[in-house]
Image (cartoon, rainbow, N blue to C red):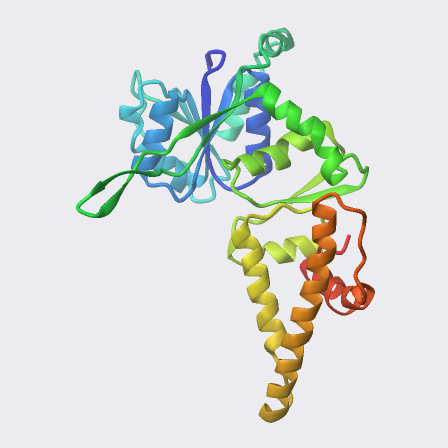
Length: 319
């Protein structure tokens, strides 16, 4: 494809093996990945691709590819739009000189067959510790006030260096024992998020981790199903994910098949017990979090057996 060293490869799509391979291949080519949210408008996609001067954009499905194809005329640096999982078709666009061509994943793989291993090794050898490993586009922030209303700014690009990423990877086993030979993890956070790239792709390069990829609708309800199947040994969740888990569990605890009068008394007892168990669990976690001497509160074993273990099993976090 004539990719220049340190050039950018944009990606828009849900977590998948192809997305993983594309990011790893980008690093081997001495280039830089830049993710795009699937919910982005064509204008927002254009900003990321134009600002980063991306030369390739990887798209999951025809709809995402159409979104990028519709703005290719104003992306002079873009050379190709690669489509994988084209269940909804591949956009048919007229090939014109100077405009990005649309290709399928298989066609893209065929292009790479002519690249010798020596070229790849040379690209890898030329990567320096301080070079950019990945571009993370943050959400736009408030940049001004106009008539008491806030105006949304453009996304900010954060450059994460190779040495910074490697430093964190090397120190991760100290915190979560990622060197355990039977570690399992569920990939579900958007791949343009630094947490997802770090845990889903970078850590398994250094540690023996089996990665289960969740379905595209993971954050709309299917995540727990994948977790129950995978039984991950560690899990990373943003606050909103834990809030959703809590909401689901609360609704489960609130269900009762007894009479309304008895149910109200039982609900009060449940609420009291849960609050008590939570205080016990919090005390134990705080002692660990602050590096204090391990502290096991009274009745912790009882709370663990009656509340904590059942919750972990229900969420698939019992390993």
